[in-house]
Picture (cartoon, rainbow, N blue to C red):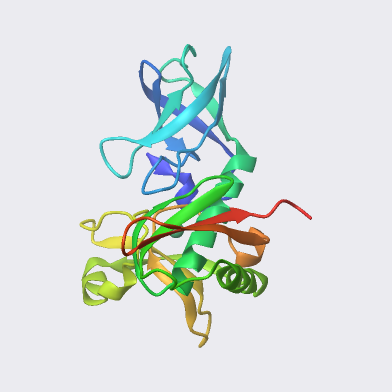
Length: 242
Ligand SMILES: [Zn+2]
């Protein structure tokens, strides 16, 4: 199965062939649908084939990290195995998830503490940090996040070998959207750091991101909650368009 969202997260639609169907679940030979994993929700959208159409309620991982399984809405008639079809994302939702996901990388770079959890959403997202009470401030974090957005840093995918990752444990901050090691290398996301400039954030990550931080638009830290003695939950939201 070819995971086209890895090669180009901006692909909104693709032609594909149905390779298997099990009740509401559909397997394709290639897909633009990102499967729910490590804090980023699975994609929704539509499948269209000769004689039918079906709404996609969710996308989940299959029995390996390289498998993305489409889950149709309840009651939908699945396409026949072998049918060629067109798979189309709900792009507005996915693009918001990409903007929010990239925002969490920026947030991660601004807070000096271990990340203990996180959740990406189309409207608001959160990261939990293992830091003392009062270590972060809503207005201050909002200002610094928007500065990184305005600086319009490039966001680049790459890979790191398992050996290099083991040798650089500091790279693993978070966010649990990272692909498992064991395949020889893992995918990385680097924000900034072109040429000799230091990077803003650099870590293993298998999620989908925007190409430049400027594309995120303005964001606000809406809440900092105390979730236990050392745990601070930072909630960040996309600002409505001006
Ligand atoms: Zn990421």
